[in-house]
Image (cartoon, rainbow, N blue to C red; front, side):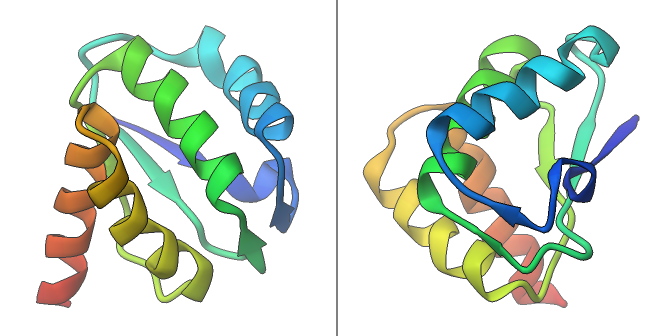
Amino acid sequence: MQIIHVKKFGDVLISRSAGLEAFGAIRPQLNPGQIVQIDFEGILTVTPSWLDEFLTHLTDYVGETVEIIPTHNASVLAILPTLAEARQDLVAKVAVRAMKEMEKK
């Protein structure tokens, strides 16, 4: 299992290009098929475009093994339902799984 601490990309995560850049930075460390957890600890805000871009490339590369560690971050909590509804792919599955996990907590 690998944990991605997105805080290392800054505490305000905005724009598609920044999401793509963040994915590019961690890609060499990823192993397809391995569980990858995303940790939003210490993040002030993340935009839908950043998270969409990051998750799209991440799921394209490693598949369904992406998990979002439960968080209280308001921006992440607001984005997940939108991604789950707007997408019909692995990103939507990741968002739905994350929402279900957070409901349990």
